[in-house]
Image (cartoon, rainbow, N blue to C red; front, side, top):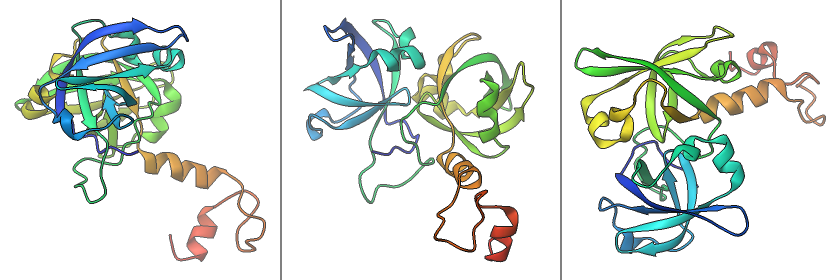
Length: 227
């Protein structure tokens, strides 16, 4: 399943119920989505986390979160009454308004500051240093399920961060307008950057004589007309 990082509605956490198997059942209510059009088993992004609908009703749905998901994402901070960003998965032929998003969170970031910037809100988000290699100026990043464009990046080992701007529409249509210093957010880096890194670092098929055992190099790309 894929998403685009364009939030389609806001929801409110109605209930969080521990299950016998160690998972947590999350019930969400929202009047922003046409729930009658969805089926059990459909994928819905909640704050950037791809979840499977296990219950549906006229006003929302429920999904199960594993203990692993609770441990490695900002979903661990949700309580009854928390607002969340919602996006149903893409259907074939849908417009791609943001960028390709998998709903698989890479890390948890922390809002370290915000300021007004020409009518919008400029946010600074600190993330673990190893994920900043995927962040580039004017590139895309997903924050709590919202596709955003990176303004600046600092790769300081001890305190790396990136800046993004939240326009008034996005602030009103998502939970981004309520962020405060210290808020934890789900981060998914750009898929293309992640796959490109894999191509550049992984070994190649030994049946391909033009490639080297060290993977795709700049010389290999140049020889094949890509650089």
